[in-house]
Image 1: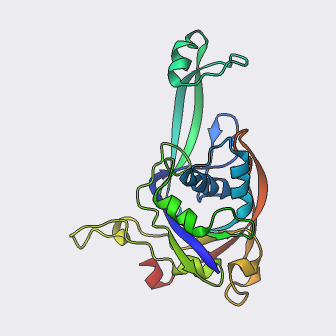
Image 2: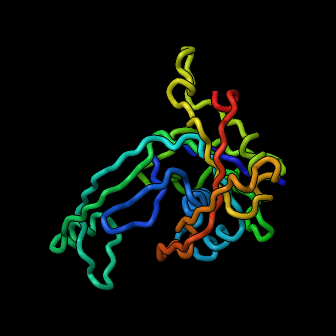
Image 3: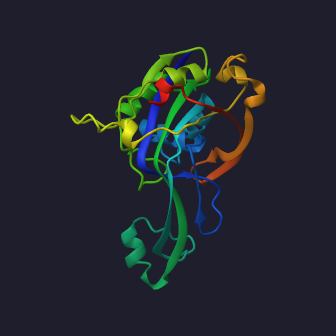
Length: 259
């Protein structure tokens, strides 16, 4: 089985959870909507392209290896925006400030971010996949739209380094993937291990059966936790999502893997 692997790292990331009023929470790892959104941006699929977005959602299976959850950061966010003008739509920020100046009012929100978080993503193409894994890899190397980690204020800080790997299941593919060091310096003490050390426990997330992830003798069934995340894209244009079930397995990296 072929898999597409790539790395997600940045000084800040925001993996959106359910928004409650003024609070914009972030998960510790990228969910399905974030990963598919990144792939869609790389391919050049617009949010109002419902056919393309649905093809992405139904065409691929995903797994995530969280190597570092990163730190927690909260931003008290204030913006000025005009109140809704009925059917009239403001097309630019200038329109909001100039045409809507009589309706301007403050909007307050509290937004959460993860700092120095590191995750590896594995993608498997299903039978109905519109784009091959090779096409996805090429798109990640030369994306049509800008790529970011959940929010436009969260750019990538390291190459995605997409790579095609042949493996028996998600776990084997995730552990075979060896990204290049994030830090490069002639100084021996400037290393990833010194400044960007992975967590002592790695978190593996995937959707589907245990056989999709690993052999039963590799991951005992009683060690798997079941989660529910509200990140299944229903309509990007209307910004609608629905819940989905996800599996979680925790593993201690070996000394070689964690170094």
